[in-house]
Image (cartoon, rainbow, N blue to C red; front, top):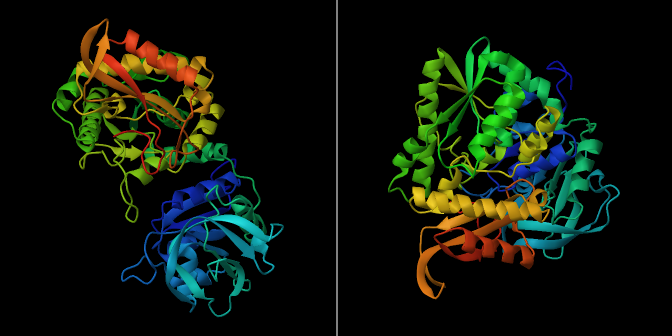
Length: 515
């Protein structure tokens, strides 16, 4: 795409509150097709205006037979564009088209082999037998009139159906999940073959469009950007600077919750390398004072979000008439902070943690991008590798890696332990292989023995995970030798620590961060 006049053909994913809705949009983009995630009840007029080349109906936690179950405008089936229903989406197709959908005797969760029983463009060039991932309680028990059964499983009479004439397709399994072996191939069949979309979109394609949107939103207004030094805020800042130049001033609020030496690195790298106007606000005492005595993680996040905004407002008044605030909000932030139909997992300080009343209009050029897509854009904009590939770091910083009250003592201990952990991970050549690796300090003490004397000190927990997009994650199998070096160094070099533990839980059921 070379400008706003060349909008790529896209697929709309309607979100019915399923845990994988955003993953569907991601998988479509991995096929080099642009996707947008919209609420399930988006008015038909808006869908028509979006002019999608195809529509995907996501899964969802409800039963289509429940009173008040999420229902789209039935007119979406008459728009003349291909529709693919996944799980709940298949059941919607069944219910809206006159089929029978009901609770099955046995819910299916996990791996399940399906058998393709009829020729279908959705399964073109794919094996007849396919390992797939199921997660459902209801099922289509009778194929709707006009539909053909195309796949089944050992315990499921309807695993996939289609109405070829109206180009309506449905699958009970989840092709967007990696456990479905040919899921990505199935999506490609839908996108390339059925929707007739060429695979031409890339994350870089959004740069000029994002620049145009920023100019359109901002006009000649003054803007500030909350710069953290991570790739998200850095890319958001550079996109904005590319759009409006010196109308932008970046504000780096050093809240005292950063990793070791990170404040200086941010100022040197961003201010000196990119020559973007930068204000460094040293607000450590302000934030620590506000957090005194606070143990609840959601309260900590809210306090930090509130103080960020108030700090921005104060700095903005020094700069003159500033109306806009740029943030590096990502799509995963929005999802985890809760939507109308998906449960809130935790508030992100730049989404759910924002105060109700602000003096700014938000500019969020990355709001619909995933982390890996942001990194591609960052490389295109010329960000150094050290910033592009920096592991994600939460906005509330070390405050949510201290379980319990945040104090100067605990911050110092955690900061030093975390620095040792990251140094050893880099030395082992594993930094780029891990999604995140960091230390956690539970606000408890345990008994130990050092130098023949009893100690009563803090434990440090090692947390390291692998992931593609932070929506799911697996604990990293770090080499024993690396764990031994980290443990030995932390206990010997960080006063106040006498025990090191390893977190071996995945997401779900855990989250990556502890708070």
